[in-house]
Structure formats: C-alpha cells, structure tokens
Image 1 (tube, rainbow, N blue to C red):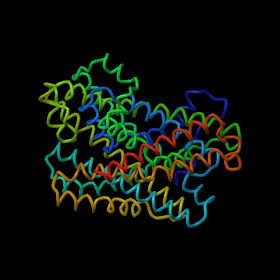
Image 2: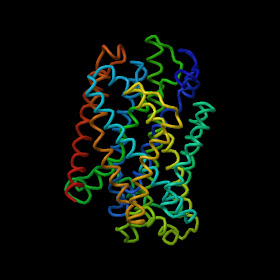
Image 3: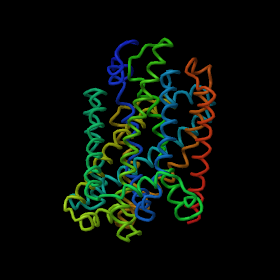
Image 4: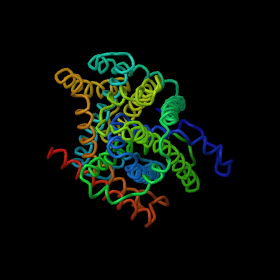
Length: 425
C-alpha cells in the first residue's frame, strides 16, 4: 500500500531536496544494527577488553554499508525486493526453503526485540519479565496506527527514536569521560583479536549480531516507496540517493554501537570490572560507578527505544517476506500478531522456567539463529545484483562484485565459527 507513495523531485533538481525525499528507508534499516541483540556483545566486549574491539564494530558496519547498498540497488534496478526476486528466479522447492529459513530468522529477531523491551520495562518500572514480554504484544496497535497515517510518518517516528537513543548515549559518554587516546588506538585492528580465543569469540559475536538478514529483504522493498523515474537516469539518481541515505543512517548505527562498547570500557573495564556481560547488570552498576544518578535510567530509556524501534521494522520485514516469497497477502494486524506470538511464547516459557537467568541465554540463541540465515540472504542478493539481465544498467561493476563476495565469505566463515563455538559450548 506504500509502493511509490512518496513523491521525489525530478532529476536535475536541487541535491538536498532530492536527498531529503529519499531519506528514511536507510534509518528503518539502521534500526536492525542497534537492536537489543547487539547490546550484550558490545557490553561484554567493552567490559572485558576495553576499547580494543572498536575496530571490529567499524569493520562490521562497513560490511553492512556495502550489503545494504546492494539491497537498495536491487529494489531500484530490478523493481523487485529480495523475496520477490527469489520467487521469480529460483525453483519452487528452493524458494520454499528460503522462505522457511527467513521466517525463522524474523522470529528470532523478534524474540530479541521482545526480550530487550521486557528487560527495559523491568529496569525502568520494576515490571516482571514475564509481564513485560506479554505487554510487548500490544505494540501491534502503535504500528497499525503509524502505518495507517502514512509511510513518511512511520519513518519520522523511527528517526525520532533513533535521535533519543543517540542523545542518551551522548549523555552517557559525556559523564563517562572515555580515554580518547585509547579509543583512537582501538580503531586500529590488532593481531590479538585473532590470537586471543576469548577476544576472537566476542569479535565474532559482534560481527554475527551486526548484519541482520531480514534487513536485506526490508531495504530492497522500502526503497520502492519513492516515486522515482523508471528510466535509466531516474534509477541511477534513485540508487545514488538511496545509498547515501543508508550510509549516513548506518553511520549513526556505528556511533551507537561504538558508544555502547566505549561506555562499558570507560565505566567497567577501567574500574577492573571485566566480567560485566548482562544488560541488567550494566544498568545496576552505571549510576554508582559513574557517580550520576540518571546514568542507569538514561541507559534503560535507550534500551526501550531500541526495542520499540526494532519491532516496527520486524513487522515490515515479516509482511514483505510473506508477500514476496509466497505472494501471500495477510492483513497487517494479523501478520504482526502471528509473528509476535511466535516470539512471545518461547520467551514466556524460558523466562518463567529459568526466571531472569533465561533472558540473556535466549538473546544469545536468537543471534545464533540469525547468523544461520545470513548465507541464504547474502548469496542470492549478490547473484541477483551481479546479473545484467535482472538489473540492467544498475548491475554491479566488477570491483563491487569482488568486494561483495569477499565480504560474504568473511561473514559466512566468521558466523560458522560462532555457530561451532556455540554448539561446542
């Protein structure tokens, strides 16, 4: 219902007006790169190793920028989202398998959002985790209202929450007073990241939690909400604006992920607390260790905003995947409710049985499931965007194909190592 609903200036108009018209989809995508599933790995990395893993966050975000640029090019050049392209170019059996794997990834991602929101509600209001998990089911009403009022308003709501998250961490960093020299040194990759098993495991966890497979489906669809020209010139302009939009938005995600790690390094690692890995533990320690009563509350507010933001993009991704792979069109409220229930039920069971101890374990499991799905999204994306028969003039040039396959190989290898380590305990 939002397809080509946002007007854009014609080719040759003012650059800033065109960029403003195309700004929005990148921020919806960026939400997935700072969801609650990323928080645990960033906190653990900063607490255990200080600023040394900052370079990993930077590398992971650069990889994400390239893959999201490919996703935007697919939607604009082929006029198809990634799920539709799979349905059009793969046999039915392969298409069905890809859909099932993708649905599992969306449920796992939704599970992380449910738990993140529930943890934030517990920290801010003392609400039991089980009650918080159940309460997250009602965010369906908020999403329905925003979608009904228009896609541009939905984007504005997302950007507002992102600004809240960025503002919260800017405040935290201001009072934490991180070591700027150590931060600069942390931006340089070092051999210890590979030679130290504990550091390597956390580095892989950061990479594995950064690139979200459902974002590749989401981005290729929502760039088509812009009514750009369908000739070659119009598509080239749209692709250029969409890539700028997503790169700027992912730069904001880079700041927030880096800020979480830097905050943990400045607050916990420098004080000798290298064992902090739980979100609620970080919440309890921030105020007394930084000497600021608001530090913990601001941290929890950012977590709540992150969880809510992620639920909206999860809704859109679920709808896009169902329609793209199966040509199945369900009412938005029903699609959201089904996905939410599939996330809420296991979350309630685990939290009820293990109490608070089960929440972090389930968060980690959700990230492993996401890492399993990555190859099934990345490989088709690179293949489609490299095919001139599908993409026309927007087919990836040789240098971009080479860079994309190198990134895919690195992500698949590192996620495989993460999975083996998880299975081996």
